[in-house]
Image 1 (cartoon, rainbow, N blue to C red):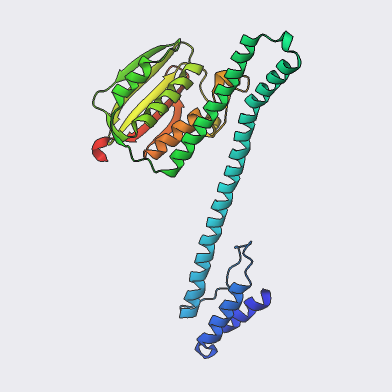
Image 2 (image 1 turned 180 degrees about the vertical axis):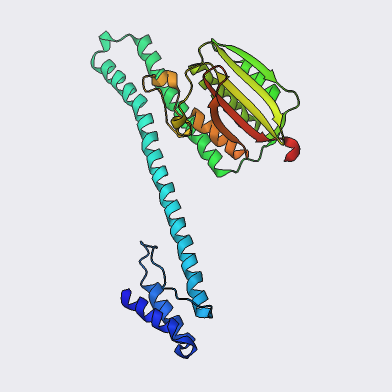
Length: 295
């Protein structure tokens, strides 16, 4: 490679008398020697504005873009591999519990309370079913092929979600009317449900939900009076299978996909979801989406 680079510099510096054919041949040699597993190599560049010099610079620019694309693909593959490992672990836990219970029942049938066994087995299966349903939803969100979007009255949908809620905390609503977005109703419903479930798990006494138009967008805030979320964790909580409270049981903590789903739904609707400090001392999840009139 070094010898080829030296030849390239001689060709470039040789000027017109070196001949375009020789210069192009030297470039071909350099390109052929590049290892497809290492895109960091670049053609040697010299000062000047000749056509061959500009060609070398253009090729180096393309190589730089290919190198960056290769890094992005590798990062994506790493994320996919980690996601597959996490999903396998989450599914294995309830299945292992179910297997142990059934094996105990098989070995000691006279010592087993059938009602308790069935209740526990159904609980494990419900957890597996919930994880699979969430994984399928995340996969659908990733395709971007949803076509059933329509105008959604956010205030009405918030009231609907709250009305079927059975949480122990007080919920205070401060909703401006006529805040309408263009969205998939079932997805927005799911996002609101996930955010409210999260607030219930962390609120001490009160959850405050506010909705308003802010410029050209809708802004929805769900705040609790719990312990809040540390600044360092405010991005990580939207990663899949992340639970900040390691002491929380998996049954109480959900599938570990609720906030990831909410974040992906917001992104799929050209919106954003982030965490701020709540005025009551806890966490405040803020959703922003374009208004329907700006669609």
